[in-house]
Length: 139
Image 1: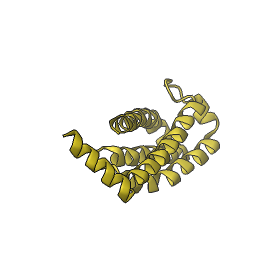
Image 2 (image 1 turned 45 degrees about the vertical axis):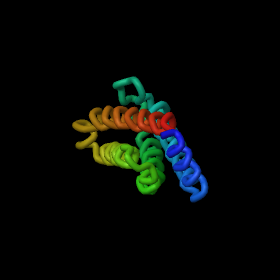
Image 3 (image 1 turned 90 degrees about the vertical axis):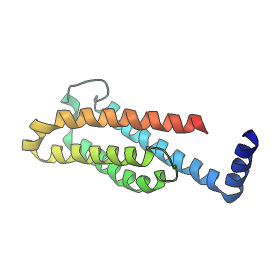
């Protein structure tokens, strides 16, 4: 079995698959870092208060646009990792960031849905980070 794994690793290295996956994982990891920076910057990580987010809604919307803009192409990039949940999780985090941005724009939606959307983004980010760590550990 070990020989077969060595053959697969050699074929992947010769065809460039390994290099493409490393590049894709670096891009996804960097983007996940920006999501974590957003959560930390607006005190959303580990706190249920939205004070900082609501004090700076313009800055938050700008940051969320960047997260969604840079995250959408990564859904396709994440498809390089077969048999993982990475593409779906990246898409869920992108959609969660987009939902928060929409709730910040519309004050009537903001009151009803913003707390739940932030909680969902935190949970989805944690799932994404867990999947990234699992994929890295399996290689």
